[in-house]
Image (cartoon, rainbow, N blue to C red; front, top):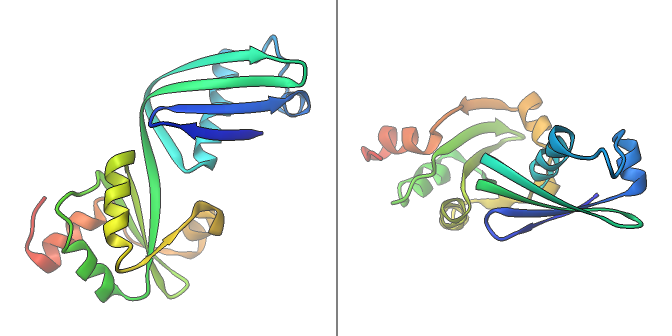
Length: 171
């Protein structure tokens, strides 16, 4: 499967005939709920989650199916890794704009900050935090490994809670 994000709310996918067959689908029956599951999985692989409605447009070809998915709002996931807690505390104190969701996990002697938000906000916040830590691409780790071997320090709103605790700053 080949997939690519186009803009803030579009995804394109190509599924070959063999891939369709592996999924138990054929070109004519690959519609509705089954195709939505494939699109959602492709988005998850790309590190993108969606909320809202999804519109799927498919074009059958000789070698497979080309799919365009338009979604309501796209949020992205970014990970920044900090070598020590002091760098993380200093970094979150510099933020003026806070992401909707952030999670902090300790794994492999590092602090993994996960940011989930709409594309523009997540990008700005991760760029600012990148001055204090390292950006990690989804291809460089497996999120399931973090969940299995890591220790979650803060599940929700980690950035806001650290700002409140260490900088006396609110949202």
